[in-house]
Length: 402
Ligand code: LLP
Image 1 (cartoon, protein in one colour):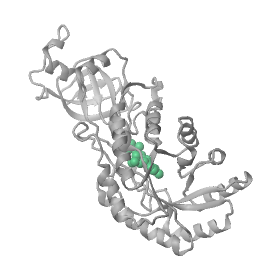
Image 2 (image 1 turned 90 degrees about the vertical axis):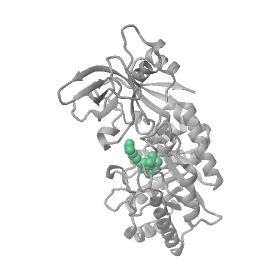
Image 3 (image 1 turned 120 degrees about the vertical axis):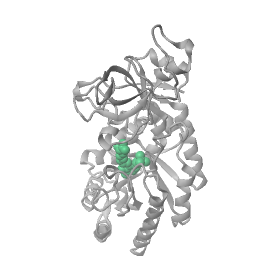
Image 4 (image 1 turned 120 degrees about the horizontal axis):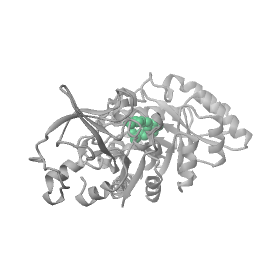
């Protein structure tokens, strides 16, 4: 929901840009940390979802740790004041350079994803005369029931160590004096709205921790990853994920003893609703079969619809304003007859030279004109971070309100 004063400010800005509502972000972070605190759960922010500096600073101020998947993310987390003892480093292909850097910075834990990686971390740590803390990322073969492109916890996925390899893991851990086993790590996928998936994950975690304990290993950390979904269809009505219900599943089903810590790696649920991509209509093309709204933003600014057929709410801010308030008309503009009655269905597309550069087809919008401002909602997670320079496009800008 955008108030008219804000839309008027948008009119003076060059498009496209990401609009960050930092108040929305703070409200979300508070809801999450209150709900986690109730159960003494620790949350690492999965910074792959958004590493915009203002976003990172805000999240750091709330005391979250950081979940990083590259050496540069580890560096950025440290530069933004996340404490090294709250940084975890995951990723299926950590390079030697990245591992060395993370060892030098004494991060909290490596989430190791293969037996070979264990050996490499051990050797690099040994050369530095250091001990590396390790959590074993297990592929639990739990179906996340989400888009198959963002499913990570099935045997066919490249992530984690399959359960039948755990015998070799134990052997490797015993052979490697520079590794300290801290616990086990899981992440089954993203945009998960069915809490049953997390219940199934808990049952698998219980089974796995028992197995490690029977092998004589103390499991101090249970890291259950992230994945909580958000409401892309109703970003105003449902702008904060249900953290209380989510954490309750883990409180109810995970077997946790007093010496153990439960860690989470949430990304999307923390940042998705705090940003919209704002762009302008460049051209309106009315055809026989299709009407196209051609925006000045495309897959180079937000690739989720093109990559995962992801749904994002699309709004014409200028059209809504025209319909809503007679005083604010610019000369020559006519109000839509009724703001609740969409005038036209449009395919909302970008300017990139690819047919797939389409945000959505058949979007019902008030009649739209060149220059109208269009908001693509719920773009705070995996939006700006996945922007690219394809077609030699300018880097997308950002605009913030507190
Ligand atoms: N932990 C690990 C090991 C992960 O791989 C991920 C996300 C997370 C935590 C955070 O998951 P979240 O809470 O954000 O669901 N670009 C895709 C999503 C890719 C997710 C990758 N891994 C999208 O736009 O939907």
